[in-house]
Length: 562
Image 1 (cartoon, rainbow, N blue to C red):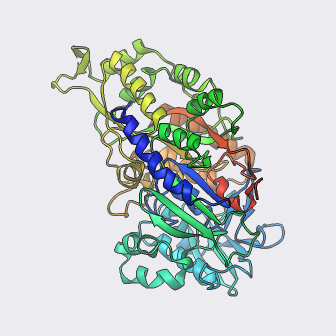
Image 2 (image 1 turned 30 degrees about the horizontal axis):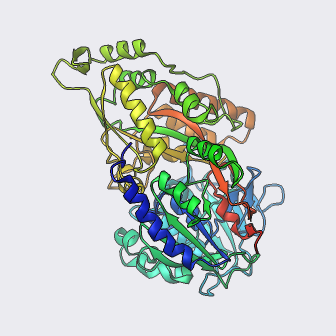
Image 3 (image 1 turned 45 degrees about the vertical axis):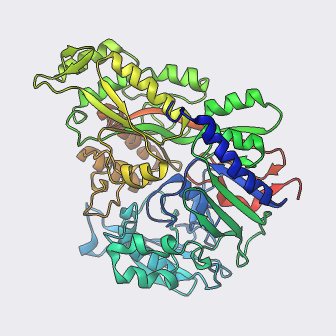
């Protein structure tokens, strides 16, 4: 595996560094090991899991899916509903009626009266309006701008009450997972130059400013690439958190992560950003009683994005050949004990919308070879295929460097693809670069292996709709990093969102999954289960199984020693 040379020195260096952390650690400190450092700490720019995990401790979205997989208020007083009149269907003005829609929805929320930013400034409707303005600005760098553009207006009813006017009635109208921005700190920076906002925001230049956050903790120090230290937020109005300090230490190599846990220099390996299932199972066999173990299956979709701008991968027969050329069932069985099922589309079997009857690509090397020949790659030289123009069938695969399981999977895929005549090069990058630049700006030449994490019945508009392809012109704001374009899929995505009838919506979901599996813009691998390795003294951590991390409820975490 990559990084094997001087491996002992690497681990040794990490343990020496870890010792300094351990000596400084107090009884009420929790040191968490994670494998990635956030590319940015701005809550609405980019969508890296490491950032979401960290920010879960220092802020809250307006709404989120809870442990029961239902929408709940985290920064609002109660969920609005059509039944009690806090959500109202309203006609759209003629100039705003699009795609045959004539009705929108007005949804009213109340911010908790005691809610304040970490510097004491009240959290108000002005912050909501400002967040919306930043989100819909074309070159602000905010991810998923379509959600902001769908908001036609926000009425300020009071300092703590507001109504959002949406341009359509969606089945998840109650959900508004806005991550609020502090207008009193960010407005002047944003208005000075929208195109430079993502670089000049205080989340980048002054990340320890207490006014940026409002959760149980605040960020007290940032050591880029190494660790982030959190301390209790004295302005937090909820239940008091248990720890006087939480340190998030970034250890990219998972073997070193295990070593640091065993040495006691970290207390806990984050399930969301820690050991892969195979590593955790092996670790449990070695230390069955030293820690508590939990394996949480969820909506975590490990896959390979194809860059469809690559002329080789633009051919669907090549993509299908690559799928038939690998034995995903064997990978799941041998690496994960069958606990991580093979994915055949982007929807997990745990989700109620899952459609089992979709095109599948079982391991069939001979069929893979025929498809490659049909695609024009029929000439073999030293086992590698060439086309009539003499071009070699060479592709590149990338993933997060230091993730031992992903690197092992890459090697297996490389070997199996070689057997059908495809030359695959491996080139990996640190997670911060891989997600912050390479994936988000479509800089990978062929294939990028990573995971999407979603909520229950999450419409994949940002990853599949043709309007969500990230470009320099839109500030790299989309998440359709494959460059996939299919008008039928665009229509289905639009239709699913506005269909309130579950039975009818289920039919639409079935069609979408079938087209996705047929077109194969992405190569599905498997649905992951996260492995949580707890110290026996730690209680209260509750994995969700979806995109909202366990850290959103960190105030419930406790140590038996406290």
